[in-house]
Length: 266
Ligand code: PEP
Image: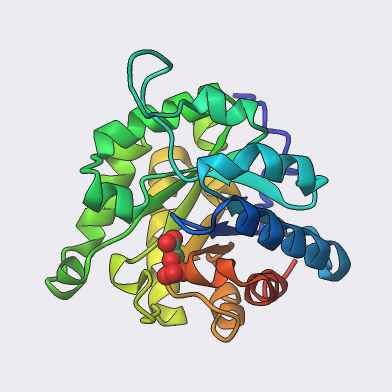
């Protein structure tokens, strides 16, 4: 069956190399502009190759960052609402995010799952609306420390994939980027070892292969997130199933963030 590929996927078996920063609830307006300008200038001067750099910023920054991005750094939001529009005071829709110039949106970050009780079913709805509005979802999955220790983590990850993403058609699934973020590694300074991360990335890709076939599994970018920094990035990114990173704390420092981008092989 012929599938039309999203424009950012060059060939069926080549996957994009991506480093995405997640600023979370940090930086006021002026600070955001200043940090982003630094990042754009450094990426412009230093990037070699075709790695994709993304900054996922708080909503108030998005439109201005888009004006400054010059296409060098892509813009993403950190969340969107699951409904198209309407009486949802304080919420932001996927269509609004798109209209501010975003190309990406984080869906299902563990902090949203934990503090805002976001379920796999809800995240599936957000994913569908993001795709409908031509946003690339950076869909996060990951196990807690308890789930890692009790050995249930493969089941947990499988359920997150099945309930959050595996309702998508093949054509839509091709537009997704997955971020594996072990909850125990986020903001803790604990990083999964390259071998631990590779094991999980291989597992995720294999689940995609079982569901959608090898071509689609090989074309899916799977990022690692969790205390990634300029010191550990190169070894993580050298693993065969790791296609880049989702970066929290280190994305708040321009030098660190750009060094992480540079750790990504083309
Ligand atoms: C994140 O929040 O997605 C993340 C990976 O954070 P950190 O890099 O700070 O662990």
